[in-house]
Image 1 (cartoon, rainbow, N blue to C red):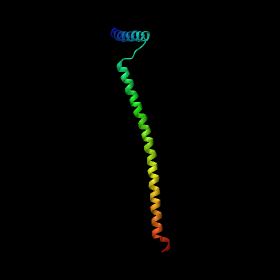
Image 2 (cartoon, rainbow, N blue to C red):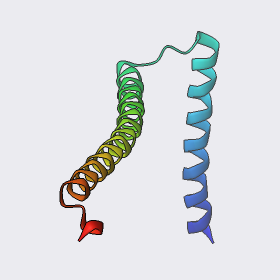
Image 3 (cartoon, one colour):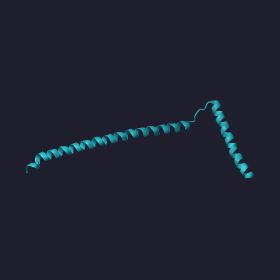
Image 4 (cartoon, rainbow, N blue to C red):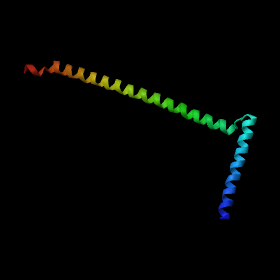
Length: 91
């Protein structure tokens, strides 16, 4: 039982220390460390890359449909030219 109390007292001490640090930061006006700023910049860069990837993917899908349409038109033109040249209905 005393072992459990000792384990809990260590946890409670850590909570008290964290609470005291949070209170000091709040009273002093929290100034982020350089590591916090770097972490925020890294997250922002990842966000920007994600936005660019979404735009790029949308453009790729649009271009794929355009190329598909061009291919269909070329095949139809080729088919019409071949039908007119060989006109199988007159044989």
